[in-house]
Image (cartoon, rainbow, N blue to C red):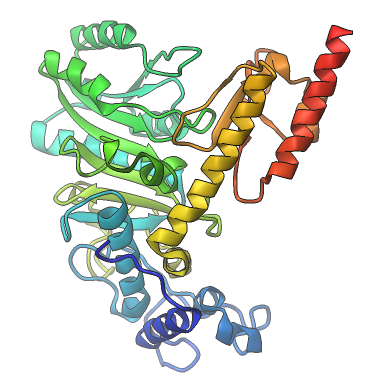
Length: 416
């Protein structure tokens, strides 16, 4: 690991305090030109004694605006201290976790996976339009039917089509025959440029796509395409369990961008997603009209909180790579144990071996049990076929045992 290491609480606090000292201080500095300030002092007490030992809350109250993209060009100098924290965070994510070359990527801390996915679609659409003279009706998104609904949002907003590829009901893998047929039909109808979205942990199943399944068929048609990895859920799980055996990283030259959420597995505050891409792509979404912004506004969100970047940095540097691996291995062992119990009960489920989501066929789970344990259905209607169990850190074996016991009682009731 080049950038990621474990730091003590004192080291983390000192690092964040130094960054905040390099930012504008709205409590003391005569900063007349910014349409921003510290948080309202009648509600948010910036002199509260507990803040001195709480770097993330300290940053939240200081209210730094991280508008722009800090991996390329210049940025607003008023917040240069915490912008550096964001760059350090992105170095860990892009280089140490997802295998990018140092200084060969761009990115930013977004509001979540939805924004980061929209940023990717926007970037690729503009890239095809600017560099290939593509028309919007010649561009299409290709993604599986299990893909997150943010892709449907993006297709609607950008006025481009989404080709939804069927997956196997049992294995959740894309149907390559259907992909081939649907791609041929799309090309015949005038589609020439394709944005491929591969999943590293779908929301409902935790299923993982293989980019080569798409590449093989697209290359057979000599089609122009770019690949985006939606690792919003799986980005802090799958790379640590699959290790170097995955093509879902920047080590794969065909992959150009990645989304990951810190407010899921990393347990950062909500509103903390990440967008990463290779160099020379994000400029396709430059907003030329933002001329009063120092540097380039290359993000969908515009103004955004620097406290979210500090939160991610704090978590990553609290654990370090080895501590994080141990945490994920514990969740994997709990998932393995849970699946073993389901096997003994002959309950059918889907589980990607390097993920911590177990999705059980609804026929084995009565609605009252699902409601008792807050299990999430695939569909909130009578056509629901699956319920998922997500083994987050707070889900312990005792909790799983309670669910299993109720499922056993239900099975006995049905048999008797």
